[in-house]
Image (cartoon, rainbow, N blue to C red):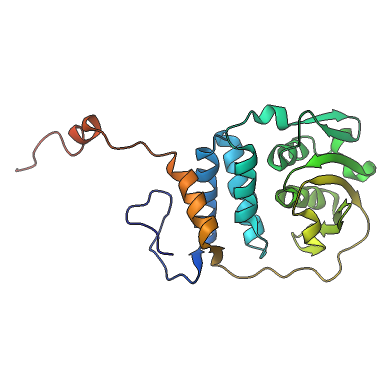
Length: 235
């Protein structure tokens, strides 16, 4: 899929694509940020979305389609209602589910404090939507603790090491579910990080671009009248 001319959601020179879009990491981050903004997320949350999506894509994990699913689920909503209700080491949803970006930001903000101190014991987080987007934030916990952090759900366990390596059953973090975060040994058979560029399937790319285009202002007679220089340069 070749980006449309003058598409403000893309940057750099268009590249050849095969059954989707081939993007650099910087292009993935820019598109993800704009798509999140177009879906109604704040600048802060949109920046977290761009970071998390790029981190996953850089490791061969499907960050773009996971972000799209999250925007379809949470976009335009009140993210405060998707923040965790923290009771000691148990985090619960106030509403139908928790947003992984909000949970991840809370983990980062509270890192080292008892409710999020992974070294003090397992942390229970209930009903997180699209938990794959939590992995980049869990990496920060692993880096701070100096050991791998494991995410266990009813479907299985995956883990993130201090250096950002991922191993285990990543599919266990693909949907909504209850999670236990714990320090439980080292990584085995980490997933290797592929080189850029990142390949995003055509439908996901198109729909993220649709979200991103919401951040643009349609042309109007007033904007056209004000375009260009106000004086001539004939000297």
